[in-house]
Length: 303
Image (tube, rainbow, N blue to C red):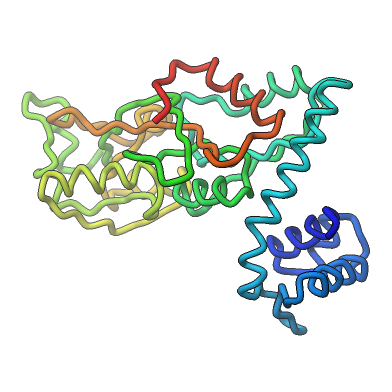
């Protein structure tokens, strides 16, 4: 079994298309198909169900995918170690991130990292599935590390290092009946908000989880009427009076046309952590970026 065959298999499994995989690999499609056939013969099992319209992983293919990723990661780590010793840090670094990262300046960090290590190819990916999906991709080996928000205990196999933490604030439109409460002596409580329509991010996003848990702990239900996965639409829905929302303070500070409400007791907090797989050794490039990332922020102990 050749590493090249595993690389082709992972590309097809992630793209679910031989055509897209061949473009990604810069290899003719017949070469990709031939490599997969060789791999299937060696393993004695079909890895894909394919016809003219679709390509899907078989049960054997699903079982092979995490092992193939781990094998390729180990091979890259070995090559990176040799390259680092011979001519400085090289290799590929694949990072996942949320759409909003608060006070973690991802572009600035990547710029400084590239300046220090120009031989490293960096791939940055955002996930529509939020922090939960990012965590799964770190565990599977699709990402070397990820910036995410997972409240509470880390899932098995995932190591979290807290980088920054900030409060979530309540926002509403300027014309909302609660808007006057922001300047009054009486503060807004969760009980006062329970009957409101909420705008929030989809389930699986870290700040959504924090707010859901806060209401559950208070024995309150709330109605999420709008789920959005981008900040621009989120702000627009709030400005137009379609609901109230909890948002990280750093994000709320950039929004015009909304009122921030004072919440009592203290609002829940939203933390950003860097996640790595605790069962897999990071490649040299990922170790270097992780060291830079943690050195740039006041972070709490790994949990």
